[in-house]
Length: 189
Image 1 (cartoon, one colour):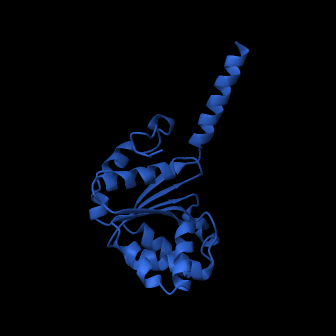
Image 2 (cartoon, helix red, strand yellow):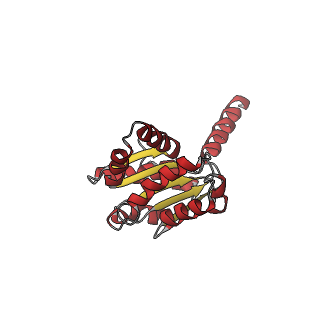
């Protein structure tokens, strides 16, 4: 199912800045190389909104690449082992918009974090990122073992960024509970 802003039910998440998100979908942040970070608990719409911005960018003719943080690190490790790391990093540095989903969900080894940092460094101030994460910045040292590298990564992805807090209440859980309640009500009738 394609994820678009029109397909996102903002009535279920009225705290989200719908006007800002629709303005971002126009793509000016891409020209300015401004990152976008979606911070929030699982089920709060982070991936849907990140994908929707990617879809809007692709519809405008931009080159977009979507990957989970774990998938990106795996690709970088495999490229390093195959002695193709430079080529892969250049490929990621050239796309107009890079979406990294689920950053800070799984801890990384120091070498994995360094590989990810190389991609972020190549893009910094040149091309934007859209990042989703469920961890507040204060807990990123759980993800990145080296505190100095952690600070450098946070610094790169927050510089001039649009930071959007999607909250703590799972939209998916709300939908499931509503469906369950509806089924229960029908059985009682």
